[in-house]
Image (cartoon, rainbow over all chains, first blue to last red; front, side, top):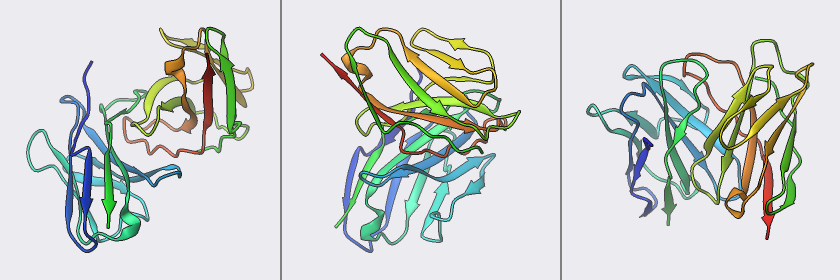
Length: 114
Length: 112
């Protein structure tokens, strides 16, 4: 069964450093998403991406965040200057460009900011 | 999207049917009911969705009441691997561009 692949599985970074979280969505999917889950809290929407541009973003997705599809397969989330409160599981997901099809999520990247 | 209400936790004996309720009393006519689950901090996993008819796949059944104000996800023969948090989410379909709003879900524990 096709999978969404995320790397790395765990990243530790110092406060103020930039991190890039990587995702390979399912190849024929056209919508891409990032969600995050702070330990013990709900899964929260960050951003959706379609046709090489952001289609929707949440209030969490401020100027320190950016997304990119640098080539035909990867989808990345960059956090420019990490803060302690950015520590969370970050999940990438993808879906095809049609109705009533569930998302496929990756296994996540655990980001720890120290 | 309509708000949903789920019990915070449930237990079920292994091999028995697990019935997970969800209340969505403010659901509107074009909104679908989706179910996802999250096993121990892994990424959420899509399970099933429905509009007004009951739906079944190889894993579960989804029963939606006639007034669509509530639904029940049924795992017919629960196994230990079904221990997870189950989320009921109401969505207006938009050709893949649907933002999922996760609540706190129901933590289902399957007991040996």
